[in-house]
Length: 532
Image: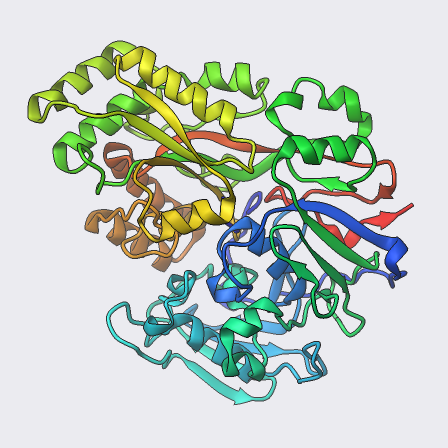
């Protein structure tokens, strides 16, 4: 998943909008005896906010950097470094930041710290995975290196952002990783910085060697953090497990404090195992399978027919019941039911129904264009809890269509994502999305707009792009969601991915901690957890 990578309902931002700080955590005891352990995964890339778009790196980046806003447990934006974010026309935004904040190397965080970081992230030649988050700002270009002319530093604590059009939900996006500030030392050697990142958030790396690749990373409390996420603990040890089964065993033995997902093998028993320490709640998570058009037999009209056939050959509900013990909900669109504007009534959603006869009919129509050859495989990362369900999907396709279908495991998430982003993976593959901010738009444009950084299947449809743009420019959230629903109805014909199901936050915690709460996006609020 991204994957960072939101939450529950979203409230439209008024024409003259301001986000306000709603609270501050109490002072925290520190020390090695108050380090919280949580499972994670080796990041795909060095930790640079504009180049981090998957959950392994995102969990780290979100805890060592502080942006203008953060999201509370329900998904509501709360000012972090921002003093105010206002606009009179939803196109030119005035942002004032709080003074006195410092990066952990002692450098002051200023308006320029944000502006330079956003310009770096947006510049074409820097090839940052999150560059598309800046496309709404004047000066952004997908074709040539171009400065974000819409950014202007007014003073050390104030800057303005001029967008290409009025966009009422712009402040809602600003809690995402891509919008974090960077210290000046970053520009001396970005790669080296990414291995030992210097942030301004609630935590910081625990000195040299804190990041032991493919093993763990240790963060300690940042005593100079001034925002609303002040840690109640002394730090975090994020352990990169090879499997969720191993992590679950450590949780049961009280060797792991927090587990962010339950392995398939324990879904029937974890609530009994953990009692009131079990987590089971809705979350802004979407699971899918991507079949790139570049694969043989999956381009043009033949590809559309085969995608629809495969989609209708998958018995989603049976897989949910057998593999996930009913802890998922079969997808009816490309977003999440916990997001305002979600609908299960989109035209064309019947392509997500299990319909063996129709699947065979569509497959035969595709064969009439070009006879099927070879086998169909679904790739997944073996260090996550994906083997059982991907094998069940492959078997459902095999049994329905009568073709050779199987899975293709890749050892680690980092390797898996690298194959996907470099277009070297030669099979279909599992994809997922853990939202970055609580809006339908975040489930759509970052994944399916032409050239978007998380567009793993390289999908492109100008009609869909135009509807995304209309949604971005809408005067209200309700109007915007109408355009996003229209776009999805086209996507249900194209199937840039095969929607599978919506995720649930299934997790748990040990007997040694208290104050554990999972947020709207299934990520635990680690700063609130305390050792007993």
